[in-house]
Length: 116
Length: 113
Image (cartoon, rainbow over all chains, first blue to last red; front, side):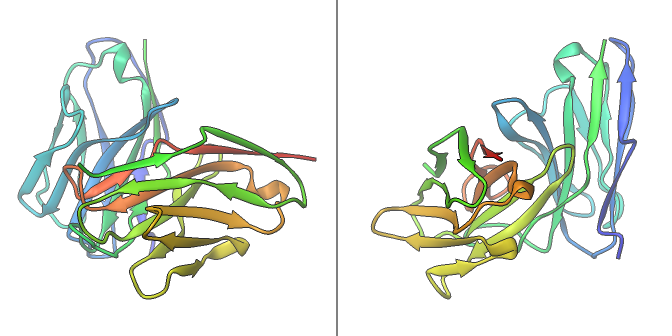
C-alpha cells in the first residue's frame, strides 16, 4: 500500500492564480480531510469528507474548494491564491471518525505552498 | 466544549534524560486519545493511542502515555531521550471539531547533546 500520497511536494504561486493539490489513498478509507499547518497554530481543518459525494467545511474553509467523486481521491482547489494561504497542507484519511472513534488518521507527506 | 491543551509549546532535554510532554483534555464523554509525531518536513505519524482498553499505553520508539481520567490528562513519556526524538508532538482527541477530532497545538521537543 502506498498509503496517502500528495502532489506536488512544493509549489510557488502568484497572487490570484488557481491550482489543485492532489490527494489519494489506497486503503479504502471513507473519511478524508485537508489541514493546513502554520507556525504556532497547529493543524487546522479546511474541509473533510465522510464518503464519496459528501463534503463539509472545517474550521478555515474560505478560499478553498473540494470535491469527492471517488473513495480514493480528494483534491483541494485554491480558487484565487492569496499570500495568507502560504502554508503546509496535509491530507489525511481514516477508516472512521466521530465520538470515541479509535481509528488512527494516516497523513500524507504534505505540500509546501508559497504564494507571492 | 471539547478541547486539548498541550501545556508546553517547547520542551528541551538532554540526550539520555527522561522526556515528559504534557496533554490535558476536556470532553463530555470518554474520548479516544492519540499522540502523533512530526519530524521536520514530514507528515504526522501515530506514536500511540488510548481507546479505553488499558490506561497505560505503549507506543513506538520507547514512548508511552498514561490516561488519567481524574486528572483529564494523557501525558507522553520516554525514559531516555535520543537525538532522533527531536520533533513536533501532537496530542489529539476524538470527538469535538467539525471532523470529530480535536488537535492540540503541538509541543516542539529539543534534544541537547
